[in-house]
Amino acid sequence: MRLTSPQILTEVIAIACAGLIALAGAQFVKAWHKRHADVGRPEGWQADVQEGTVIVAPYLVALIVLLIVRAILGSLHGHTAAIDTALQLTTALVLVRLGVYLLRVMMGADSWIRTWENRITLALWLTMSFSLVGWLDVVESTLSHINLIPGKAFSLWALLKGVVIVSAFVIITSLIARALEKRVMRAQQLAVSTRIGISKFAYFILVSIGAMLGINQAGVDVTTLNVLTGAIGLGLGFGLQAIASNFVSGFVLLIDKSIKPGDVISFTGHTGTSTENFGWVQELRGRYVVVRDRDGVETLVPNQNLITNSVINWSYSDQRVRIRLPVVISYDDDPEFALKLLFDAVANHPRILHDPPPVTRLMAFEDYGMRIEVRFWIADPMNGVNNVRSDVNRAIWRLFKDNGVKIPVAQRELRMLEPLPSRHFKPPEKTGVDQDDD
Image (cartoon, rainbow, N blue to C red; front, top):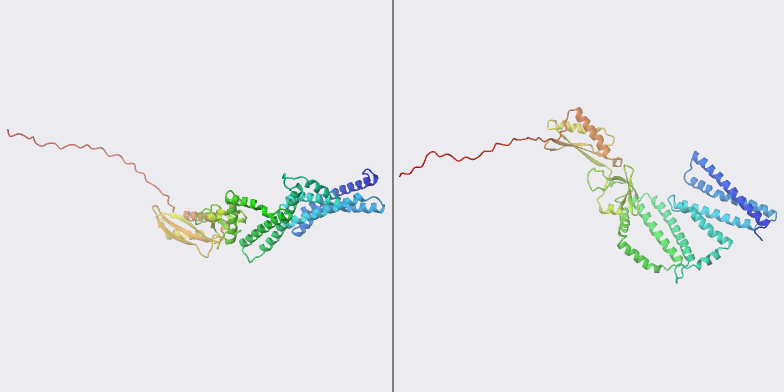
């Protein structure tokens, strides 16, 4: 039957009308979804169901319109071959689009499938469409005659087939790894670092196994990859040794539980209450650790640095931290009274612990004053240390000023001396003259 026949033209017009109605329905569904999203956005599985309905709704509308047209033409004993093909293609599009969306939901919100969702849908739908209309064999035969490597039986069709098979195996093993990760992360009896280590290690192993199985199923002999693995090993020995070291260090950090999410750390190498490079551990990744400081800046610290350098973990076993504040008073002041003022300066601060209680000490007699010190504990260093230090120093200054206690300043006295007059040596004068007897 010719394409310009009335029967075919009728079906083409019906298919075009179904497409236009589907577009109008898509716009209506999007507007409805936007209005309800402004009122209140659902959460959890309800949000996933609503989003999936909005995505599949246009294709379902087109499918319903085609079914109605098919029923009308069938009742009138008209030609329905093109309508039947359009129904098959639309049904395949609905199934593929819904399947890709469900795959994205299972992979998680941060999955790479979100970026490639439409491209994957189009590729799968075109493959199914060619198979439904009988064009897939022709495409396969054409691509099989295009050799990518001269003299080798490696065609473009073999490459595309291998990519699809390997991708399918990797996606399946990724889903298994994600499910295992969710189950492990819910195990509250395990430490957070242990849970992260198990999930990351399982994800790496499962995806690697999936890639190897996919390569094997694609018809590539795995034993032929010895040269590739040897090149990778050589690269690890030279150019990639830093990356490999960071990955191994990441697993060490997860196993020994020295650094875990939520810890407060600083990596200056200093002891005491230094707060340079002070931050909170946000994430433990394969190559680096994400540390967020009080300015909101996230620093990516290589795992190797945390293994080879000294790191202060403020919350390793106990979050309580002792702060020492020294101050110098004049020799004219009473040290007992000054020590009492130091104790009063820390007595009412809300973040300073009463158990163990603050203490004051007379530390040394120095050249220009007596050095005294107040020591106290806080239990929340993640909320900052220098802010508590500042509050106490301000209180000390106010109390000292109100009570007349002086903080001496080192002074030097410079004396200008006049030079002494120079004195010349004079020989002694003779008292008599020597005379000869002659």
